[in-house]
Image (cartoon, rainbow, N blue to C red; front, side):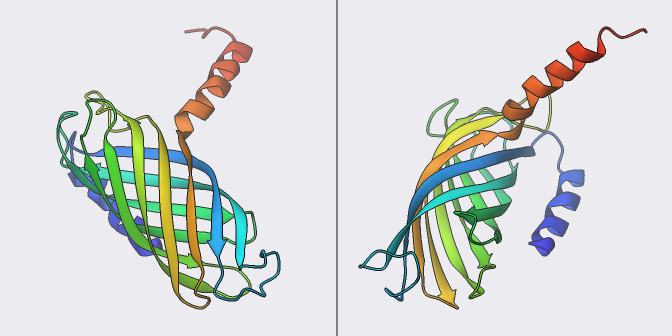
Length: 188
């Protein structure tokens, strides 16, 4: 994940208005299919329901309008029911299926810091509002996602989940407005 971050930050310096950056809060739910049905908290068939929570940051290149396909990178920090920490990252393809609501297909790797230290690969399908911002590098997004993750070392768990991604600026803007109101008008 550190390597991906080191690649993303310099890339934004040379990529002008064609670069889009987004950050989001990820909320959802799903099920983990355990390779060991006797795992603690699992049902009799080896499944366990999970709450998905985390943050994701994306940088997408090659887009000048809403009709352009984009290619980019993502980094994420996720958890399943607060039982583990899952850093990850990978590639993302943005396909403009609608003017304001493109489809994003992501594929990457993750590491699962828990009792067993596992890791693997996964993919996410995302659809929602992601409009190209002609005036700034940051794009506000709001969308729905489904994902599948499979651990290939450590345990052999498979995660199937879905949920919503809410842009961090949507969550922080009311607090910024409140802070401005508390401070009062500028003296300049």
